[in-house]
Amino acid sequence: MEKELDFTGAPEPVVKKLSGYLKNLVAKIGDGLESIVVYGSASSGEFDPKRSNINLVIVVDKLNLELLHRVQPLVKRGARKGIVAPLFLTHEHMNTSSDVFPIEFLDMSDFHKVILGKDPFAKLKIGTENLRLECEEKLKGSLINLRQSYLEIADQRGPMMNLVASSIIGVVSIFRGLIRLAGKKAPASKKEVIAKTAELYPVPPNNFSFALEIKLTAPRMTREEMDAFFAAYIRDLEELALYVDRMGKKETKAPAKKSGKARARKASPRKVAKKPAAKKITKKSAKQKKTTPKKTQPAAKKIRPTANKPTTKKSKTKTAAPRKK
Image 1: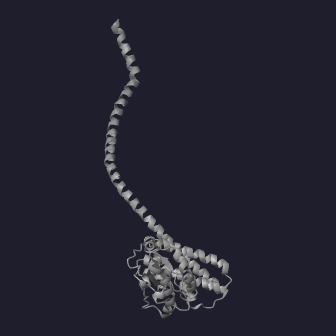
Image 2: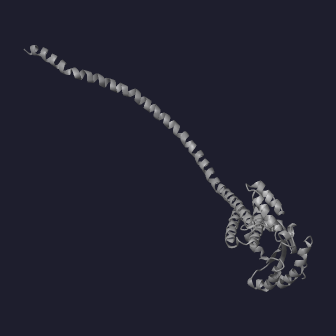
């Protein structure tokens, strides 16, 4: 059965690049092909023919090395035209991986266009329980990559500009994840994403906005200007990464606080139960205090006459002597 490609609504430069490429790809894949999806800037309205790449998802019924080997030469030629190597996926892989990569799957689900077949994201359930963790992981991963790359290319203006330009695309994707984490809808526009993130989180937008400007216009900068900007850019990323990390620690501490309160509530009835016992003890102690003086008073009286016994004995012996005679 002939499979027709639907480019309705796609930017004209995207259609020109994909028309021949996808026809050949469909023929190479054969009957196992289920869906072709364009995502990213090519479907979000921000496609720039000079700077933007084209991203594709290819869904097949079975994925093996033989299929990848068959399409590899075509994919290699497409990369020269700005068509990134497609993501070859199966429905099983998508269903079992969406919770592990919520940032990527949410981005693809929100901003995509189906070129062929059924929409693979229509019924896909994307779990967000790991969204905060992936945002933190990607922020810290970006910091590691930026620092390592700086050590290699700090003295080269062109590579440094490219480093920042490629970095900000990933950062904007993370920002969309953070916006969704706050329960808000993520905008398609990168500028709006940066502004929205600054509203929701304690991060200034200036350095991220300038990084996006580097991506779009490549302004001229001296080595000193680039170093100053790069230091501020990394500092803001690091502060945001630490903030997102603290969010996770608050989540893990919350149950401990509740259990502490529960323990306090359980302990309070025990304290109340001990109060009657304490009253009985005080009554007994009061009785003991009343009885002890009674015992000591007669003892004191006995002690006093015993001290005078020698005198009484002497008086008795003197009177008893005449009676015997």
